[in-house]
Image (cartoon, rainbow, N blue to C red; front, side, top):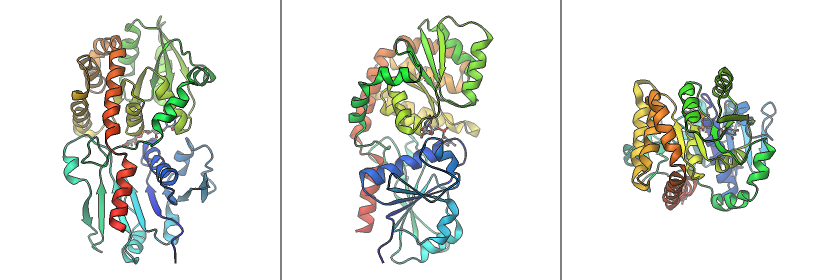
Length: 368
Ligand code: TRH
């Protein structure tokens, strides 16, 4: 009997939005670029509904845009297994579903899409199988990355066309959110643990007329308090609401400097080809600093000589905030050159196949 769906995609939201954000971009690309029937099992659908406005987290199952069925995590226990099962970020499936998967015939293709890393060890692990300890069925580890020996990053086929189309609407889009396109727009989407005080002082010191576009969250609330503490001649702000991923991508593309975080907004800033500071998700024993340095070393050869201000500002933001008041203004002085650098980095990324193309090539190869 033909299965109702092609792919079962699993997302276990730990915290923040990125687990759901990445899973949703994967689901959309598989459904709309590849015409695959995708079923997304998620433990916290309310996180997804924050930026998938048509989703009612209280009333699942729901078919979104006639292509993606969103289910509660445990619904998988009462469903047959689709021919392809994809875990995101090593989320581990319910044991009873694993048993169904391992006993299904023909054996489904089982893939785990890992967290994105620029570290070189990723290339040696990409697409390696790991046999299930009890049933022996292989689970393939798919590693996103920044080289053609990895799974790449999610780049929609129509990315550049969409940016070109929307660029004509920049003024209207920004003013509809009370943003001032005549100012230097700095979008801020970072963690509350970020060095917000040094960030505000460094932006003020840059002597540019800046408008802060504050994405929803605790960090923005703290920034508004900091701005209220004393007058800032050069800074104004506007709070922007939680919007869908397409509008979020437009905010990134229409801003001049981006403070982004986690994994997905970090990638989307690169695809917007705008200078950015990456507030990497903090981890113990400074593991996140090693990841940051790996990325900075990866991108450096593609950037011009002014990029050292950008590298320094990224390191200071995450690891040495007292120096941010020097490095960030210096970086802002070279913003135009850095924007050209980010365009050449994006050109490099576009040379690698998109994660979805690499994923589907692997699926077709294994299922042929
Ligand atoms: O929310 P994040 O901090 O998520 C992070 C990452 O997933 C990281 O890998 C994980 O380890 C950590 O959580 C626990 O940042 P990120 O990855 O940028 O995800 C945010 C998502 O929210 C992204 O898909 C963009 C989306 N978004 C919107 O669609 N609209 C919005 O208005 C905003 C602010 C975000």
